[in-house]
Image (tube, rainbow, N blue to C red):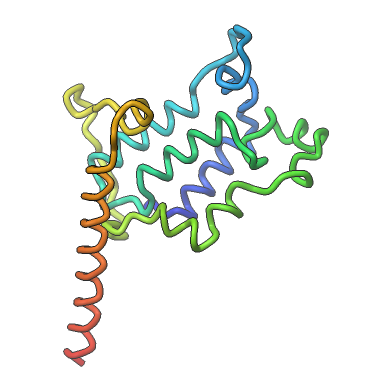
Length: 179
């Protein structure tokens, strides 16, 4: 339901092309000046997606790592996708000609592989996430990513990925034998 290309298109259409002022809203990390225009609206959007992802981990083709990657590049990026405040400013600064699109990088098969959720099961069901306070959790992998050792977590995730890939391979073999 929430494939990587669809999610990229959503961000491109609703945030980037619609003129979300990334340079103003995400200025806090890049500049030390105080501005009333700074606002982590895009971060809040990513956090909302992450909250739903926590409740429906098999409904998203991408992983938490993809959301963190987007967050990091919205605040500081060598790619042009999140630079500027609108399309007019991007054109004036020649951003599209001077930089590479974030999506071009992400969609490289070697890079994309690191963001693919092996638990993803495409479906067209409507997701109805719980909004009860006890259902919402702190996104520690984002906000505490520099203060914790994530090695054990990453090893467990790798083990799950290997198990899921073996399961898919066995299903393919089973279907081939069944014919």
